[in-house]
Image 1 (cartoon, rainbow over the protein chains, first blue to last red):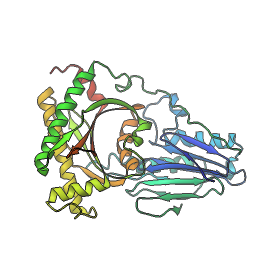
Image 2 (cartoon, each protein chain N blue to C red; image 1 turned 45 degrees about the vertical axis):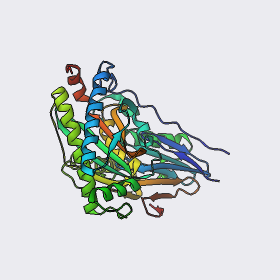
Image 3 (cartoon, rainbow over the protein chains, first blue to last red; image 1 turned 180 degrees about the vertical axis):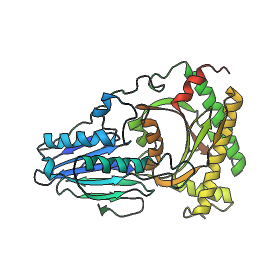
Image 4 (spheres, each protein chain N blue to C red; image 1 turned 120 degrees about the horizontal axis):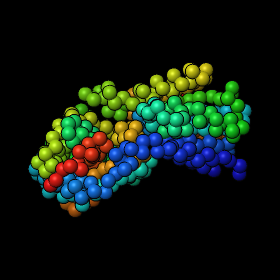
Length: 163
Length: 218
């Protein structure tokens, strides 16, 4: 039987149980970052809110609210749970601009900034993205199946589809 | 069953001097009066616009942890309509009017003078009608606050979102997350004909304007 584990705002959840499904509900501008080691069957998901902290504070380094610091913590937790960095498969979902085209959407396009931050960070870490379903102006629920590493998204009125 | 579950790393309070974190209880009476007057005014405006008596529940002023925001209106995946605008000026902040999807359809019927059940989907015309509701509520709220405390603000044009509740609320969360772990909100529920849960109306002052409130007398 499936066991859903909710990945809330600014959280990281890790699992290696094939019954588990990591779920982030209704991602708008937030970005879901799913990492999977297929050999060790270790899965982890980060639900990041913002690209990076706006203060040059050391505390930012340990904060899973941010894409930048969260990615590093996610990798660390996956390796701690038995995964190997070189085998990690990465998929992204979310990062929408919920406000669409409005007068104030440009400065507030946090969704796009989240996507850019993830791309930049993963490039720095020399890690490739296997798939992504990002941007636009639509909310997405992300399900990450630990049994096989499948990442699927669902939008309002739509069927679940793989990333 | 073998499984590992890593609890979220707790974010340090990175901005302990954030006005939200050190929310001053002295502000509460003032904010409550602003919420009551402003929201009452918005409801009166909405009553005039729709020709129906719109009442409001007692407005509340609360400091809500950001992580709870997606759950404030029931399930995070519920389909909803959000009308969002920003207030620019001395009383800067965010204003959100959020309806369950079915309720938004009925409100459109009311606005365009059609029998209930006529509107089946929200095209650009229907969305403009809902944007007008946001415009009106925002303007009435801000005008009431301006005459109460003398702080001026202009509403931006509204954005209308039709999506999952959590995705809509990400707009507020993303704006507030940069400055702390909580969000200060004035909230109420609009009702028509005694039915509750018709629409939620939230006003979220920017943290930086709260300090100015301390010097205001009503």
